[in-house]
Amino acid sequence: MTMDGGRALVLGGGGVAGIAWEAGLLTGLAEQGVDLTAADLIVGTSAGSVVGTFAAYGADLAAAVKAMRERPQGESAATSGGVDPEVILSAFAILYDKTLEPQEARARLGRMALEAPVAERGVVLEELGRMLPGQEWPERRLIVTGVDAEDGSFAPWDAGSGVPLALAVRASCSVPCVFPPVEIGGRRYMDGGTRSVTNADLAKGASAVVILEPMGHLTPRETLRRELAELGDARVAAIGPDQAAIETFGADILSPALYGPGFQAGLDQAASAIDEIRKIWDA
Image (cartoon, rainbow, N blue to C red):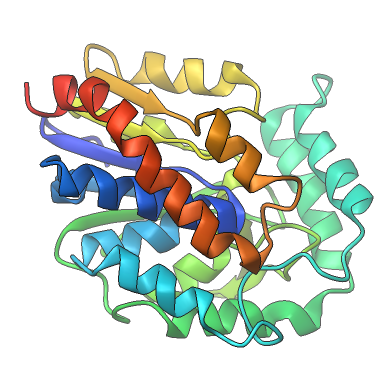
């Protein structure tokens, strides 16, 4: 999957907050003359897989977020309602256990995800798949990330993987212990963010890489530093939410109430982020 030059856009995970903020930021940047969706490669993880699919299709991101916001709340969108936050926190803590190899840590988390009593929440992911702008992989190169919940192995999917786009996105968004893992080809897969919230190393070989990381303020920097090292001499800009956006996100990044405010936060941040991005994107 290594690139040979070109520009890459990496869209990280972050729940509803991430979808809204990334869409708003991309919209704001485009309005000011920097269209990141024209990238030669888009890498999407979890929330980023949703935004990445819309972006790769050239869809109107503002309209997409508006449609998500206007869905009936009871049927809609990634929400953590009914799930004990402590269960989620303790589950993800496994990923940062230094005594475990990363794949083993993911496998342990996967076992928790497989056993979690959240099967009925699979309909939320199914709805998400139906809302995508198309069911076929787009012409623009897109990679969607997942993790095998049974053995913790990494699964990056693209148009040549033989996996339906909607299934790949649903799996990438399957937050452990919130949504059930998604079956693909007889295996069950969970959120690609359990390997990395960005998976920016998939942009290896690109000349310029812009990374949007909605959860950059909450996750250890060690993983991103390793990924940046993989990118070698590429020109890189890694953009996380500013303080205003962080305050907008609040404690529940999966709340459907964040679609509007999160989008606006991203839109507002475009003005302060554009110079750093333009410097590497237009060089």
